[in-house]
Amino acid sequence: MDDALAAYGTGHADGMAGNHDGDRAGDPQTGADYLVGIVDGQIAAFEDALVAAIRKAMDEKAGDGPGV
Image (spheres, rainbow, N blue to C red):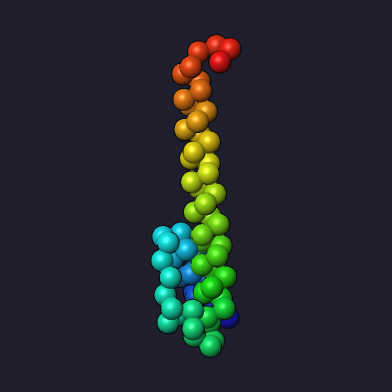
């Protein structure tokens, strides 16, 4: 179980960073956990980028003045 959690955590970090380790993904014991971590990390990175883009757009709109 500890190995599975460690593989997931590594996969999550790699997914957030946009990395992929084919050797870890191919591991028969923990490869599936690593791959799930990759996907979750990629989703988390997308969510972070989306929130940042929305905040930036809202800040720019606030500077446009009233009624705009």
